[in-house]
Length: 557
Image (cartoon, rainbow, N blue to C red; front, side, top):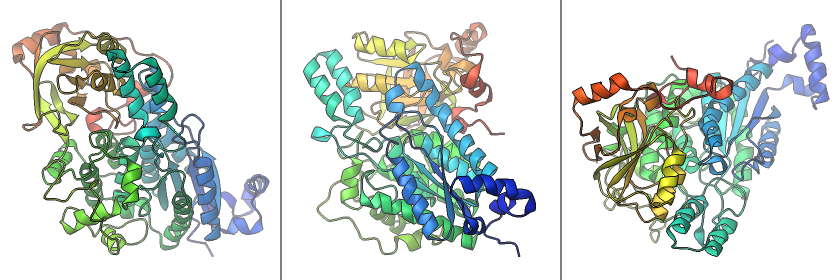
């Protein structure tokens, strides 16, 4: 009789013809009984490339133990990662978003090639996390995502953004070399993802709200007993999902993506969530658009006072209960869909039923009548500079509108040097172009320029727009994902120094004070101003990648 729990592994290991397969597997630790068990692949993003992932090999061992104890046979395998924090501001950053696609492809390849019946994916850095989920959705086999966990705070509550902003402070002369070195040596105390509501913690929270990770997986420190237990529970959960045939397609829906967007907004999360959620939805066959972020953002306030725009770190949010009490607040307010299925085999409402509220004394998560911001900080802007949309992260602290004069740069490096050399004046709109998915190629993050602006004390006096994107650590009056990008002839590539640019986060508008005839005249003479690679992974990526407004995916329609 065919074991319905083994639809994929049985093809690999059952029968006379698969004797060679079994021989190979015996060498890696299989015995007679293991061939009768469902196989669960443990996709580990362990790497000594970055502190975000340096501990994930141990977490993978715990996930393996949990799966094996539940009656499965677990097999650990690895994929790559690229560190945003290390490659930031360098040509290496071109490969960061590209790595999302490579990681997704590699997990799909290993799982499908080896015939695993279920999957645990473990991610710890910005791009490998959505990559894990994208692969889970493509494969559509019982699977659970595990977040590697957030880093502990450094001395004086420092984190990676403290270092980037210290560079700007040193350039402005407000700190000296010894102070800069002190920040450098103390900001990153050990394993775990960057400690604010930056992209990693944002995406962990979004994935939990999506229903693809276990309750509280997003709100645990990397070095903790809770995280090890989370991994063991994840291994066991996948075995339960195999038993009841619960797959990602039974969990993800338009409603579950709406839940994810809602939680991201309430937490004041990263602009990268827009890019990644669009990409994940595409892999899951869900019709999600930029306009969904606007619609949801009109009714959902920012409630969490967390970095980079706020005061608190993720570890401090964990101390008061993580995101589960916040999700229950949103559910009780009618802002979450409680009837959606999750990887526990229960609905979101059932998962949240026994969650206790935050302590009354805490001030990290605000009440609905006292929000950090009454509506979303994530703004989708349109206009003659962004006919297909742009993404802004507007906390309100820097105001809700900005009108200034364009200073145009054709690379991140050019802009950063100008900021550090004191060549940017108040009232400027810094324009960084040819940094989009095709033009970069790779859509680099502009954390170095935005941090330099903050470090120089110009956060309220200048704005920045780009067809690239931002780190979750970026804050200020910054607009990214401008589409169409410059490399395909988008209007941002037509700008000249001195043009007047208006950004209106209330009207959701991004425009240059030029009429269509002048834009047409410039368009007729426009030529690509940057050479892009003709060979290798960046060239392949540039040829296949979609617009940022569609998630910058490489396997779309």
